Image (cartoon, rainbow, N blue to C red; front, side):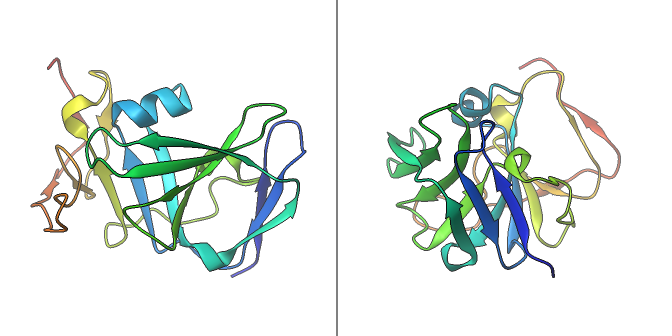
Length: 162
C-alpha cells in the first residue's frame, strides 16, 4: 500500500495514513448527517498509529454520543472548519477519517467483509443502499459490545418514508 494523504480545505492541516483501513463504516445517524452536512458519513477506520499529522494542529470538539453516552472527539481545522477525523472514547486507539478529506477519497475498497451501513433507522428517506453490504437499523453492536444481526440486501434497497 502506498501512503495516502489528505487535509482541510485551506491547506493548514495535512495528514497521511500509512496503512489501509481496517473497515469502512457508512454512518447514517443524525450526528453524522449534521457533522457532514450530507446524508451520511463515509468513514474508513484506522489504527490511530497509522495517522501522521504532517502540518498544522487540529482543534478538537468533544460531543457526547446520544446513542452510547460516550464522548466522540471531532478533530477539525480552526481556520476553515473542515472536519478531518474522529477519535472515540468507546473505541480507544481507533480513528475514523472523513473520507472526503483524502486527496483521493476513493483509494480504499468497499468490500462486504470489511464494510457496513449503520443507523438506517434514521437514514434520509431518499437514500439508496447498495446490495451485498451488511446493514443495521442502529449501530452494529449494542452499548455493551454485543454484535447485532445484519441485514444484507440482494438488490439495491431504497429507504422509504419512516
